[in-house]
Length: 158
Image (cartoon, rainbow, N blue to C red; front, top):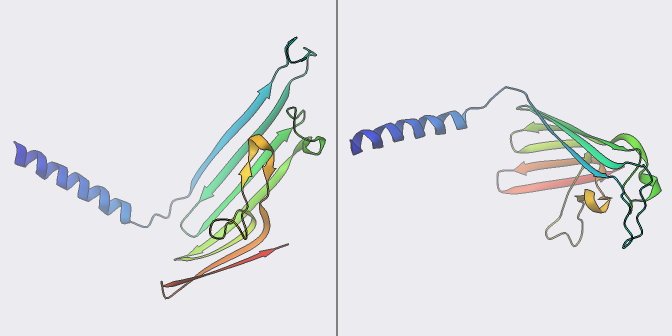
């Protein structure tokens, strides 16, 4: 019985590994929605007053992936931003969109992207929505693998 279970496990596991190594030409679409909301209530300690307003920061991310091309966009809705966010955040729009072309280990990204060199002392871009930080680069990034030993990274910002 033990040999039979070991044989079945080996066959199933090896089939899983074979399928994982296949190049897939399917297109996958995924995404996420994040909405931070605030409905003020009367609070004598903090001084908050129930004024009937409804504040929200809403983000919708969409990602499309295929074998040679990836693309994505983020839609933001902040008609009435949460307290602590500057008035410049008021509105809706598509602040980030990008397209990535892939050929083996070589990549070309055009649009909004994040990058970090080493520990981030020279260059670090990141997003922290809850703090209102998004310092993505708008431009192009080219990653070229040379002889599978060296990688050349070029970043151009518009």
